[in-house]
Amino acid sequence: MKSKCEQAMEYFSSGFNCAQSVLTPFSADYGLSEEHCLKIACAFGAGMGRQQHTCGAITGALMVLGLHYGKGKMDDNAKKLDTYEKTRAFFKAFGEKHGSTGCLELLDGLRMDNPADMKKIEELDLHNTRCAKLVNDAVELVQEYLTH
Image (cartoon, rainbow, N blue to C red; front, side, top):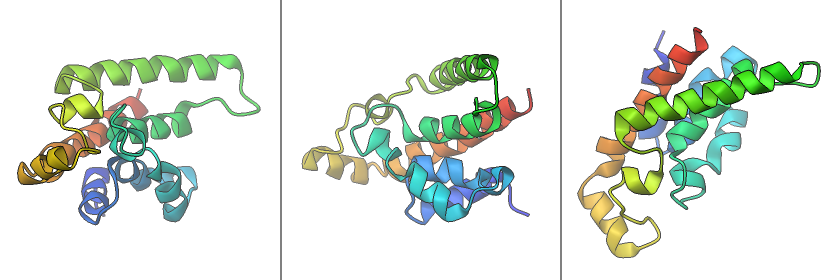
């Protein structure tokens, strides 16, 4: 059986975005279909629809944390507060490891909506070098948070 990181890398190398690639390996763990996870996370890639806000690998991981710890209809408010605490801790750990949590900063300030910058992103192969590592690290980190 493939690890969650291996599954994430397969999604990512198949053209799915960072958020999709982080969330979807966890689909069966929470009774969700692969297709639903891919669709739910689609809008979050590249910092929310290529706006380059919060890194999509982070938003995908936060969806996993929400599935695992989040507050549902029958839960008390402590579940929400616990999820928020884990979210802040995840952001802090990811930011410390990579120097930022923002897609734009993680891509050295290169803008995806600028054709010249997009060409540079492609020339530097940041998708396969930088973003793939961010996806892998987000999966590893979220797995740590699922165990405590």
